[in-house]
Amino acid sequence: MEEIRNRVAESKLVTVNLEDYYQPGSRRSLDISEWLYEGFILKEKEFRDAVKAHDWEQYEHAFLAVYCTSDAIIPAWAYMLITAQAAPYARRVFYGDLEALEASIYQETLANTDFSHLKDKPVIVKGCSEKPVPQNAYLLLIQHLQPLVKSLLYGEACSSVPLYKRK
Image (cartoon, rainbow, N blue to C red; front, side, top):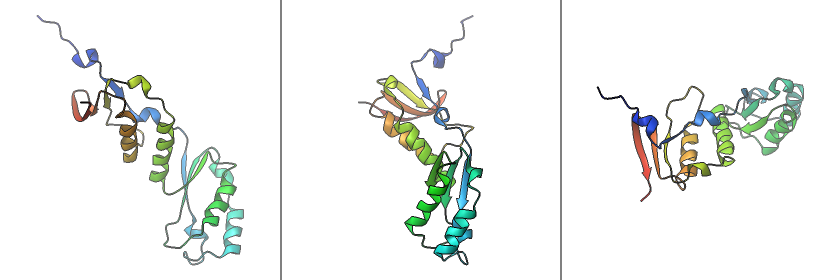
């Protein structure tokens, strides 16, 4: 009887899992529409009072996404004021919703990652993850890897989708 071989384990294929680049820490969001008069008008004094009265310590070491769900026009200084109050507590303050925050965290992490060890190698980007990985992170990863790698696949080694092969 012939020995069973694991050809996937024997291959030179390198797996990249975006989950490995997930930054730990809580993600919090702050919708400032409740600080607006009738949800649409920013009155400076009342807005400043709401910002001052807010419990900023609740964002200690958290990634904070700040946004407004109403169609109000919010001046830049308002978000700057919020950031000035939150920055001593939050790990990072970001304008946008939680999904955009996550994409931004991945963008920063991937930009600061050295992928040179993957030069001229066949690479597969793992598709399934248990941690939240935004779609944009996959796009950013491909842009970092494509100039380096010999080939790019997506999925699992047993059922992958070819994406790129250097000519």
